Image 1 (cartoon, rainbow, N blue to C red):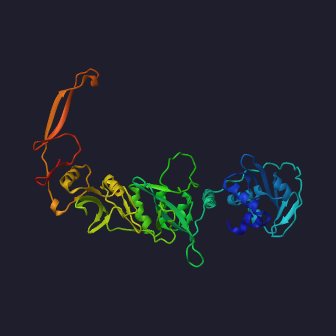
Image 2: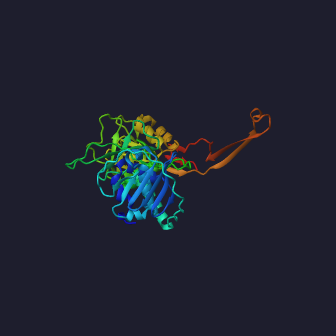
Length: 456
């Protein structure tokens, strides 16, 4: 239907902005029930729990309107009338009034032309009129018209609920360096900043991003990242769509998702480190963190002579020909990630983090010169040992032992078996005369032969 043939376009000037807004809400919420409609008249019920009877009748050149609410009694028009006019336009009713010229809108014999002329309408008291004879029901709107009306209502509801994101507002991602690192994860907060007139940026601030805003964000990378931060939640089955839920102020991201999302954050060019242990640390003035894709760092132990002629064992991060002290990164995440002040990179997933964490906190393991072989033997037999690098003078041969299983069967303790006789079996393994039980040792070191026999 063309705009010129709509009642809403013809008489919009006659209604206040508030009446049109409230009437639109009634219409969007489907609170208008057309009881009878035709090309010249409409009868409807409008409202929620309490409904108002609304009548519009066109005869001659007059559109007579009637409603029982206080606003109509005072002004001659109201939100219920506006909601009914919108429903009449959508349903194809009152087409004679919509297409007529010089149509008067009449409220209890007070007439106003359908032109933007300011006319003061005095308050009137509605007179009781005899009920008109029943009219035959109007034919229902065609199926295609109903479909288009449903689509228009759904879209209008979506646009009314939607909160637009300013095009020039930029999202920042802050990786927080905590005093006590998150076990196997990172903590991220989301901030935003806006440009000044001179092209520089205003100070960033925390931003409250609603889940419903994510699909409308201008940058695809932000939509992907914030969707990951949103995660999932329990589904309860009722109609609440979470439009008012917001992304948490501090997002704790565990592995392995942290390894997936961190490269995406760094590649935006808008990811920064914030050391919460330093009160004066701030994002302002920092360079964004870069993603280091040269490969994963591996944790190794290096045993070498100390300055006091003793021996020292310290941890190193190694990658190809590169080496870095484990104290150098500002944070190392189990599972894992390595953060320096400028870069973020992967940590090898098979890293024995207990070794790394202890040496990062306690520093170097020192031993006197006389304990050299005992230190090396203890290291080699320790469970979960990282790759160990030793100087040439401590080079050793590593061999795989061949075990011979041994089983010893003996009587059990009846007190522990409720008086029932049972047998006990002890399993051990014979490695060239050395009997090894279930203790989780990696093997043993023979200092005289400079040989390490690894358990199979």
